[in-house]
Each structure stands twice: as structure tokens, then as C-alpha cells.
Length: 120
Image (cartoon, rainbow, N blue to C red):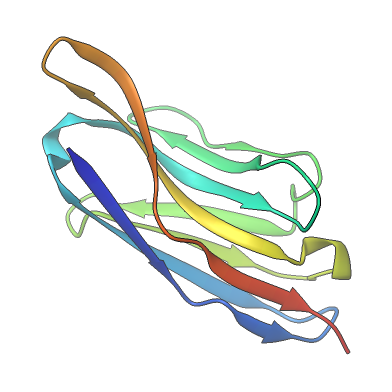
């Protein structure tokens, strides 16, 4: 099993920046992707950034050129640097891990969310 714990949310003004961090633990060797999702009030959870092992990072169109996700495999962490934040970026942000476990492939887990509020 894999667990992920995110941190770094908070209140930020429009146009500001914020950095989220996440640490993965458990069956780290089984992870094949890390990333970030978010869920705004009244909306479905959506992918923000996906970082597959050895692959290119995929971003939601709404955050391209504003958000940068990165992984540190030595520390089992994934980060999300958010810039030029907009009120519509307000959401609960969830760290995400996809992993294989035994004969089970591409299991998914989301940790507890961290709230990001963009408001003046």
C-alpha cells in the first residue's frame, strides 16, 4: 500500500504564489506515477498535474504556464508550485499516487486534501 500526505495550503491573494508539498510512504517501489488533483466546491475532482515515472508531466489546460509540478524520487516527494493564482484556483488540493500491488495494477490513492483559497 502507498500513502501520501500533502501540506502547504492556505489563503493567498489573486496573482500570488503558493507551493504545495507531498510525501509518499509505504510501498514506494511500486509507484508508477505521482501527481495532484483538486476539487472546487460543487465540482468534480479534476487532474491538475500528473508525473508518470520516466515520462513527461501532464497538466490541466487551466493551469498550464502557471503551475509547475516536480518530483524528488530520492525523497519520495512531489511538489506543486502555483503562480499567478486566480480565484477559480480555489479548491481542496489532493496529492495522488498510482501504484501496482501484487497482481493489482494501477491502484490509486489520494491523501487528505489541503485547502487553497485565492481571495482578496
